[in-house]
Image (cartoon, rainbow, N blue to C red):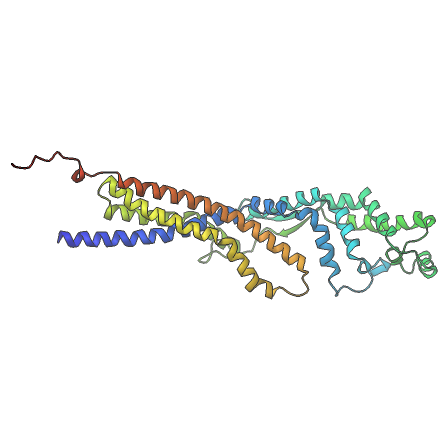
Length: 362
């Protein structure tokens, strides 16, 4: 009977060891994803590493100029910005949103988004104060002169339309003589000042819940996606408790000495580290394969190739951060488990103690 109980205990311990390995790898991935994917710093670093803030004017210019569905002049004789080239849009974005201001605006918004996900704020907004200042300030005037000087010379018909005020699109279509600059520049400045005055100080992209909204705690995962995300993140943070429970079962059913403790703990931890290390090393190759086989073929044709490539570069940077942390933790697990496993070999039990044998009988 005792032998049967021993076999059952070893079976439970072995099964718990296997489940410990699987749940440890899963918990390692979940806790790492929770720390990195829901961390504003991960995205801030990725944007800086990929030099997004300096290359964004070119990206926006190509994206805008590639659109073909924006036709017609603005209402009230306002200039039609559809005649602008990609180089013009690049100059506009670079003048109104320089890299430093763009980085400040983006990082401020990222901080708000993840504070919202953590329940520390109820709204997220994009600050536009820097844009308003540059639009109505010297940067706006410099932009006007740059756009005008980049146009071909105005024809007589353009000048007549401009002087009569019937077609202000000539402000963009052509470059008037220099003696007309005192007339043209104020017209543009008036348009920019009007645009700056109409811009709010910030744009709210996530509004606070209304008074009549459903309570966030109703339903199995809450009444809104944000509540669901918070519950999932809580489960991610608590996921290490599952492998600890299986390790406790291993200890209860198999450990009878310090030697067996080192062995029954060391081997599963070592295997967990090896498996996590392999999966961590495969993270980026799997991302590249998924991109080539599943994502790239489904990207709409109107999205420029360089923007799609930029998305891949950002994803690689984020996945690299995640895989780097996974590999580091896997190496720690692997080293600890291997040390415990090897150490168990050199630990002797009482039955293995050195005993002086009596001399053989003559």
